[in-house]
Length: 416
Image 1: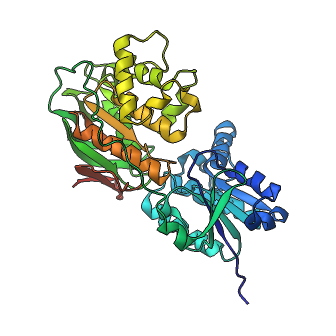
Image 2: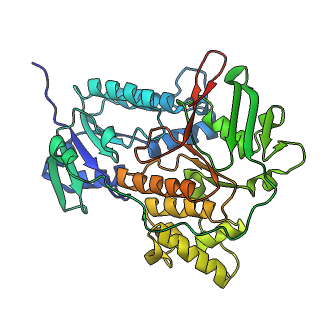
């Protein structure tokens, strides 16, 4: 007789819930649906757990996830890392698995492959899934729990939960983004021009004959599976990737390496990635964080002018956070921090705005707000936008897509 297991999912509508919080919830026995798990042994599949193995790999040049492969864990793609972690956890023979937002940063094919694997695993092991997006919810889930706090919650069937409107969200449509405080002069119509760019790392082809132009005011989405070269392209444009200096990479009309410093280039580019959040540790307020974008500092070290505070206040209204202006940035929720940092990157109206995975780890409602802000920036400014994401965001409205398609000799590019 086939064993029938009951599986649960928890909708993480906030950002305090995580695997540690769930473990405490199981131990307290305050949630009837989860009481049976206290007597069982569990394992956690999450980005936090994976990061610990990556840190071990960096310190010791070895990780238990790698085994006898002879490869460093750092050379694994996002999908390969998650596969390795899952295999490692299953070897521990747990009674249940806690799966915490495991699809973040994965391309669509990797997501589908992982879903198939976990569907098979669910026939033998209890699953507790923490999820933020309805498309991430496993089809085999029996009950969904929605928590207000660690004691108050509601229980739904999957069908009843998906029928409710938990996922609506948008940026304020009535607010227009503030004008540029200063004008950028002397930059051409073509901001980025990659001409027949090919990149190899240690004999492994990454990019093959990539030609891509980004013109003034265009809104591009840069797509492609994990490992296709999206990060390489961004590092050649915004960073100091040495490969950019031997390839035909032109930024703002000048070949990279022909005179302008990295800092002169970065002055013309607004940039966001989730990793930037970790740089801000000072007790600056939300308003001060926006002002810091005007002076290109990590945090604010000088008294802002009245004009700077006025401009920051206008941006706070656009993103709906004027009531948070005096709140400490590090105490804000993750969605609030994202909106602020994107506004900070845009506050000077740079010629080019690069947004690298701005919706990672956000719930659906928050992701829609972020996409609404990006759409507004593109529609109401002359700034060109490059948006990079591992998933197609429903609320995003790019004008053009540049797709990286993996091939034997490196990824090839397709504009459409």
